[in-house]
Length: 441
Ligand SMILES: Cc1cc2nc3c(=O)[nH]c(=O)nc-3n(C[C@H](O)[C@H](O)[C@H](O)COP(=O)(O)OP(=O)(O)OC[C@H]3O[C@@H](n4cnc5c(N)ncnc54)[C@H](O)[C@@H]3O)c2cc1C
Image (cartoon, rainbow, N blue to C red; front, side, top):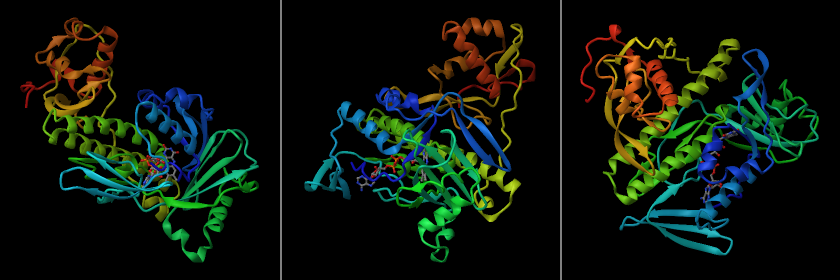
């Protein structure tokens, strides 16, 4: 484990990381670490400048990645993980017997580790071989760390520039970390060295002009920020997590959250493969589908933001990253609150066996599918949907339905589940539905 090569200093994490950190036993330490928790961000995009409540009413974090990673490492050690500090893996080889031999350089000299299972969490570079699919145009991030800046407040700043975009975030000591995202051709030698290009680009920014009157106190570093996915992220005996499987566009600020959440799912996949509770196809397809879905979802989210900027100020930089937003298939409609309204399962809604997380294993369980749902959904929070959907095989008034559900689910959650099923067209008013086909396929 080599946590010493952390170049990017500040990163913004959404509040959704907190429940994940709680699951990992690291939330308390992260919340006590004194990271800034700004509630607003200043954004200049598509011709407007505004202050945005960063994450609605919740607060995210501006972490110092070096400190954050150390806190995660300590939590792992508390949970019983044996860590070989400052080890750099040089070679990872699959042995004939199915295990792995891992050669690492450590401060004490070379070291060999044998393992039954390999988890590649080495970031974009990836230790295990594989084919990466680019999700957007090549992008390079140039980052530096600034002191004595003239910027009011501690709100992060995101700005669309001419042919680049900027992100900057403050650290508790008043210093700032600032990154410019550009196309790789901006780094050709004729434009000057890295630091010159970086400072010149920052000088063009409206929101970050107060930085360049300060002092650049780090070297300027360049790294890839191209979003990419590995469509084969798992096999029997190995798995890729975090950026090694799927690297998001940094515009989303979701890379860390996604790495944590996929790693938690990966732990269940590994557990299932090692305990052989089901056929390996079940956990393998679960993980590969999950990564593929997440890649597509984030490609569209980030692409829509570039599209917005390209509509305002067209240029090859924005066009190359744009994705035209798809009109949501979810049409808002009022839930029929009249208890005498008759509801029934929609003909297109089916229950299909699908690999899902159940506790710490992946199993085949029935899940709800509908053309308007992205993928299949088994649980809404803790509530398992199929038995609830099955009660709607025959048309019945809402009051009768809720009475039947009271044996299956508490009333406060019943109304949430009903509203979700209604919004996603899994249930319909009886008079609007065609004859219902059997729920099993
Ligand atoms: C410029 C930029 C800005 C970003 N900003 C944000 C943001 O604001 N918010 C956000 O959520 N995400 C952001 N991201 C994305 C985020 O940084 C990544 O998604 C996240 O760090 C992925 O975590 P990871 O553990 O998979 O990989 P990494 O964080 O890259 O960690 C990989 C680790 O593996 C170690 N390693 C690599 N090779 C070896 C080896 N051979 N032996 C031993 N150890 C090794 C590395 O030293 C490192 O410690 C940004 C990304 C970029 C490029």
